Length: 255
Length: 350
Ligand SMILES: Cc1ncc(C[n+]2csc(CCOP(=O)(O)OP(=O)(O)O)c2C)c(N)n1
Ligand code: SF4
Ligand SMILES: [Mg+2]
Image 1 (cartoon, each protein chain N blue to C red):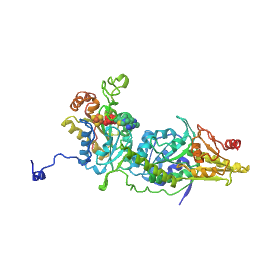
Image 2 (spheres, helix red, strand yellow):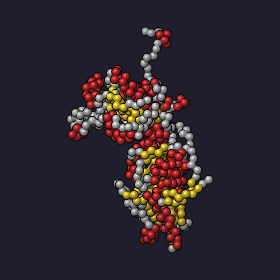
Image 3 (tube, protein in one colour):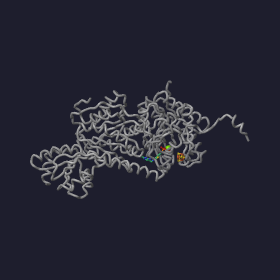
Image 4 (cartoon, each protein chain N blue to C red):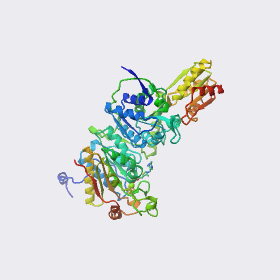
């Protein structure tokens, strides 16, 4: 047992980031929403942005993110986060504004808002959680659901003849001139977590620099609606999700 | 120092908003109100404001939502189909207790309808703010000067009651030109609301703008709070105008453009010795029940005139509460009543 003096002398190497509250997160075991929260929180602290930041919380399993992030928060209607964020940024340009959106929120109901926000080169950051399902509403198909993936609304697996092919959001946004930083990352081992954090940091730095729109897509787990154990979910990302959604930095700006 | 200039209703409501301190406008083009965004695009830049053309009315109202959350005076405008799209955002603004001003220059409907003058969004304007328990406070000017004046009044009212305020016009009021007496443009008030977000600067506790309350008694309490504000608004913001004979045999009920038609009819009837009066609600929600309840005791009938198929008359009948007959004269689909038509139909009733 270390004594009090040892503790006082010890260097803190891991603690709760200041940008997270003490509230216990309510994500399922093995869900990477929590990892994504932590990475964003670490970045906000490291860039010294906590006191300027507004999170735009959207509708999905992360709907309680306003309770978890220790920053000002605005709740947006399903899919409208980027429009709400734009309204905040335009009327309060000193604020650092980011949306935190799932793939149902961003790629289904909110696709128009995110594309036009990117097209305007709006100086906001989007954290995009792609878990290939609607988690919150009990595992229905999302535009990002893989071909053949069973969901509660594709009980025989996603059939491209019926539901088309998976929506590739980064590829879609990559051609838009207003985009300053765009990357797809995942969080399945220390290396990919580090890379994800690096991209999140660059995305927020792009906003600080006023370079334009930034978005990081995070390929995430939803063990519950993938009908998998947490480790199987990680393996499924490595084997299936990354086949469809290769990790890549699509756009980087010149600082 | 005030000066008089010729302006359309669209221009007047836009200039009135700027004069009141509105510095943010987000909108999407739709006839018959295109001159509002055009005016804002031209003139907000002069005062350091922001005009942004949204990709849809869904986006417009959510841009408004974001700017409103920072405590800014913010406005959007549209016409009927666009207002339908804004219902979601209006509901979220009510639930999050955010103020804004929305102008609806009503056109013929339903569907894509036409660009004629209509009043067929009365239910949408006085009942609607999307889903849930709540509405917009709604005011209906009937002259271009009033458009200008109400734009200015609407912002502090929205702030006071923390809800969207709708200014209801129509295709005619939007595009007719009349002289308007202008005031000096004011600076926006400080954003010192204790709910405004933008970053917890200077160490203040963080703030959350939210309409999600999964704890049902908390949600009920919010609805009660909103309702109490509406009750206060009913006490303080109920407005109406009366016009015409002080000892009438019957009373017209009409708002907006229909009220102007009724004023002409009243003057012409007076020449024929027929005594008529007008009650013109200016606030549609809160609705001015009192003058209707009072005049209903003293006249033979109340004749409701509206450019919709019996929407406004429902509120009149509620206010009259069976004390006298209530008749309805209407045209719809963008057709505007003429004074002659109202004269003829009223004479059949008398
Ligand atoms: C207008 C509207 N339609 C539908 C819903 C229901 N709904 C809530 S969350 C959700 C999907 C969320 O999925 P996603 O964005 O992928 O987030 P996840 O839960 O997977 O993190 C839906 C359809 C809603 N809240 N609002
Ligand atoms: S349902 Fe899926 S996305 Fe939602 S918390 Fe559970 S694992 Fe995460
Ligand atoms: Mg999802």
